[in-house]
Image (cartoon, rainbow, N blue to C red; front, side, top):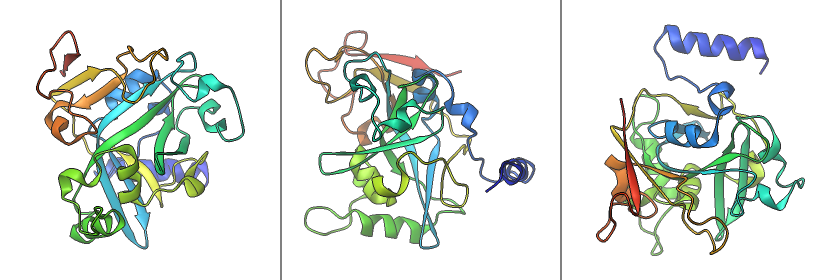
Length: 239
């Protein structure tokens, strides 16, 4: 799709108050800012005529200089999306599944989409949710509950039908995959340390952001018993 038609598409969405595709400029900013402001936004992926959708509830920011980031290992063809302009898709395999990231401002900087929650509206109805549950059954082959369906980076990609081979190093496509500003904003955001970072690889950095209203449904609840505010996490109040 040409730039002209992309601009026209965005204009029509605004005028008609239709879903709003986030522009590349949204992503071409500091990774932590992008990670925070992605909370409440909705990923939409069209599969066989259905828009499968999920609201982002947990993200992690990564920088080129972080020892825990993929980019810190250097440029390779597989990691090239991390070194492209903000708004490119970077996908990789983790723990046997697919993981979704978006490049941010500055070479090597990106945001990992850690978990989400199924989103239903006029564009994504009950049929879409049913398809997501078919995509991502539990270990016994039964439908996962909505609370568990996208509660982790690989579960999210499986539910939405997102594959490394289809989307790595690609741009958003308003006819197939994009992030929608549905004008939802968390009232409180929890900022804490990232998950799965090995010891000695900047595991102390508080670059993980969670929508407090959905904390129980993310990869690991930062508000679980035993966690202490100002020690284990901080709370960011929204305006």
